[in-house]
Length: 223
Image (cartoon, rainbow, N blue to C red; front, side):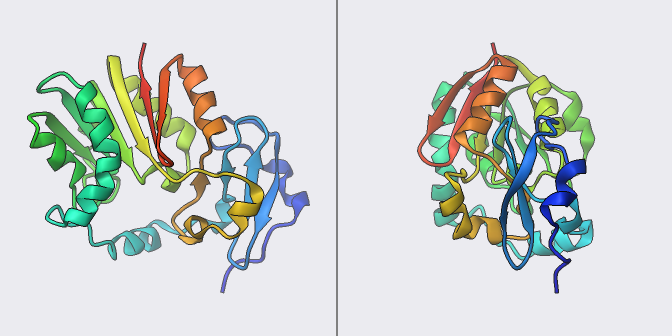
């Protein structure tokens, strides 16, 4: 049983969790939740009444079987790894943000000689790693889970050294029609949905060089 869906009148107090704009409006509704879209940055997000409690969110992640020995999983992560790793200097320092219960991308970088730190709010919660600087940071299938994406992404950006890279992998919103039948929105832990417009606005804000790769990877380079 889900909470009663919000009406459009209930959105008057909502603001975008990425850019803080109050120019938000109803975007979609299904049997589980409502979805709101920010007119300023294009982020589609789920209102807080539909966010899972932390213990329920973790219980969902505990079901994931992310095994570093799984070649299929490695091939999935290679969509980011293969385009980011060649841009790095030898033995670069990296942070795998949101590494999950079976860190694998970090291992792939370490196998190429890079020095990796891990952070995950549930599985590697040592915030000391968020007080250091890095040549690159990765966030694969992470940003869609963030309740405060603006705050978190700005924090990651500050951790990058000059000329550093931020690599993000997440499925992108195309349009309202596609969203209505999109499987990606059905995961109850997915509460923020980015588009090319959303990332382009972030790139402008950060004064970053930006590169889209395929359907779900974006790279930002710090000036």
